[in-house]
Length: 79
Figure 1 (cartoon, helix red, strand yellow):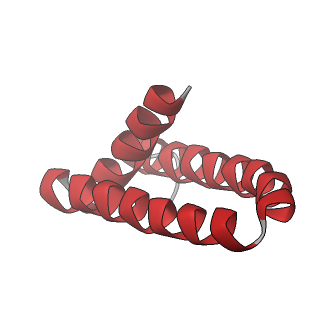
Figure 2: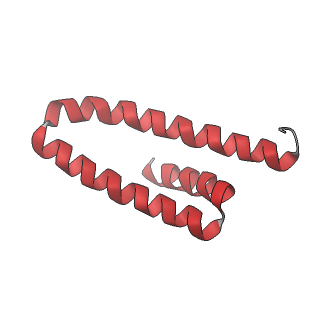
């Protein structure tokens, strides 16, 4: 599941910002996410698990929407 998430994020980011910038954004986002996850698990283990699922779903939804928007723009369906 994590690999699918990384691939989805990479597709959305490269469609929006180009290959180099898109991949750099994905790597930076995962680095920040890892740091925040370690920080949260060290301080609030129970609440971090609940919020982790919520934020993961929200991030995945955001990637899907951004990718769909870029695909619509590429197809000339959106102005």
